[in-house]
Image 1 (tube, rainbow, N blue to C red):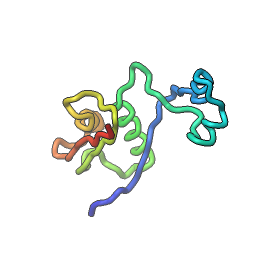
Image 2 (image 1 turned 30 degrees about the vertical axis):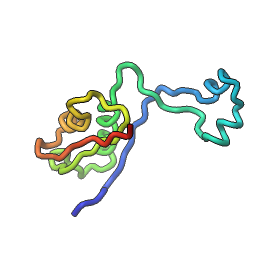
Image 3 (image 1 turned 180 degrees about the vertical axis):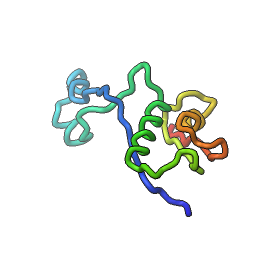
Length: 112
């Protein structure tokens, strides 16, 4: 059976303050709050890659779904606009790091 059993996410700790950035360009806080609705955005630091975020999210998934066995995964998809490299695809890096089997289908979906 094909389906999604569980989801997890990981956001980097570093944040970019949208309100402070808006003030630099003369945009008032109300515009940001009412139109965009996000006061700050998470941003990777210089030592992080997309695969790091994916691996951390998978670790959280394992904590939430203890019965999940990475060695039995059949499919892995990474959706990102900013992959680690052109080749190999980021999903292959994540596949290796989390211990998914070689036969696990993995691919990236680029939002670019």
